Image (cartoon, rainbow, N blue to C red; front, side, top):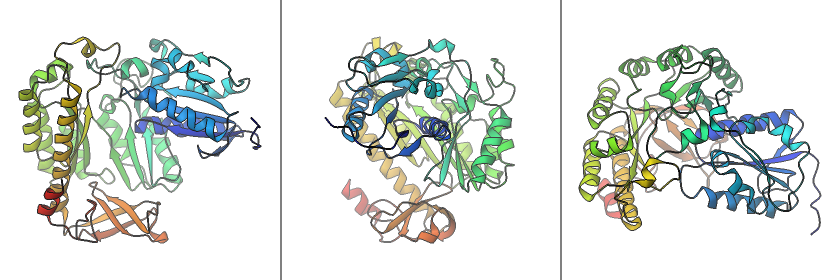
Amino acid sequence: MSKVNIQPKTVAFHTLGCKLNFAETSTIARQLTDAGYQKVNFDEPAQVYIINTCSVTENADKECKLHVKRAAKANPDGLVAIIGCYAQLKPEEISAIEGVDLVLGAKEKFNILSYLDDLEKSESYGQVHSCEIDEMDFFVGSYSIGDRTRAFLKVQDGCDYKCTYCTIPLARGISRSDTIENVVNNAKEIAGRGIKEIVLTGVNIGDYGKGEFGNKKHEHTFLDLISELDKVEGIERIRISSIEPNLLKDESIELVSKSRSFVPHFHIPLQSGSDELLKKMKRRYLTRLYFNRVNKIREVMPNAAIGVDVIVGFPGETEELFMETYNFLNDLPISYLHVFTYSERENTEAADMQGAVPIPERKRRNKMLRILSEIKKMEFYRTQLGNKLPVLWEHENKNGMMYGFTENYVRVVKPFDEKSVNQIEEIVLDKITEEGNVSIKEMQFEDFLAKI
C-alpha cells in the first residue's frame, strides 16, 4: 500500500466520554501544537492519531476498535495512540487491537510527547506504558478550547467513593484537586480567549479541596472555589457540571442564586429512587436528602434547570423497586434525565451480585425513563415560555438554523446569523418546535405526548 503524502508532524484527536476527557484532550493537543504539530481532523491523513477513551459502558472496546479503523482508513501508515480510562483499565487488551501502536495509562498520557519521538508502526502488539493507579496522586490542570462557545475547566480528578458499579476510581485514582490559584488563572486565560461560558468539570467536583496541595486534607472547599471564580472578570457564565447531592450544600446553592456569573443549572446524580438500591450501590445519601436538595434549589431559584443521572437494571432491581425510582422521579420538580442502562464491569462489587436483570427488561426500563425525561423537559420548557432570557448562540450552522442555550439550559433555535455566533442575546421564549427546542413552530403538549 502506498504511503499517503502528508506534511510532517500532523496529529488528529478523537475523544470519547465525559467533559473531563474533552478538557484533557484539549490540553494534550496544546502540548503537541506547542511542540510543532499541526492539528487536523480525525478523518484526514495524519502522522499521529490519538484516541482518548472512556470506560463507563461495556461498549468501550467496540468504540475504541471503531475509531482505530477510522484512523487506518484515513492513513494506513499513521501511528495510533490510545489514552484515557479504558487505556488505564485494559492496556494489554488494547495493545492487541490491530493498528494500535501505543497505549498510555493515566499518568503517562500527559507525557505523550516523549513517547512519540521514537515510536514506529507496530506489526503486532502496541507498546504499553501504564502505571499502577495508586501512583496517580498528582494533579494536571486542563481546560478545553476550540470551536466551542464554552470551555470545560478541570478543577478536580479521581474519586474516593466506592460505588459498587463504578470503575472510575480504578481508572483515575484518588480524589485530588487543582489549587484555587491555578483554577482562577486558567479561568482568566479562558476569558482572554473570548469564550463566554465555563463548565466546571471533574470526577467528583463537590469533593474539591481534597489533595489540593498533595495531601488528603481539605485546604479549601467547593464553596471557596466557586466564591473565587465568581470574581473572575470576562466570563459571562459559569456552569456547574455533575455534583453529588451529599456534597451540594445549601450555602453553595445560595451563592449560585445570588451569583454574578454562576447560572441556575444543576446536574445531580441520583442513580436510584429506591433507598434499598442506593444502599446496595454504596451511595452516600438516601432519597430524603435528594428530595431536600431539589426543593432547596426550587425554593431559591424557581426557574433553575435540574438534571438527574439514573441507572436502570442494577442487580436486585425488581419491578417494584424500579417503580419506586419511576414514581420518585415523576413527582420531583426536575427538568430532564440522563438514563444509563446498568452493565457489568470487571473488578466491581456489583458484577458479583445476585439478581441480574434480563437485558430486554433493562432496555424496557431505560425507554420508560427516557420518555419520562422528554415529558419532564417539555413541562419545564412550557414553564419558561414568555420569559425574556439571555441566550448564548453557538457557531454551528445546521441547515440554515443556529442553536443556543439560556442560562437555565433551555435549547433555543433561530435562523443562522453569523453576527450572533458566540454572542449573548436576550430573547423572549415563544413557542416549542416539533424537534423539542424553543421558538419557530408551536406544538401543543398533547400532540407531543401523542408522538411518544
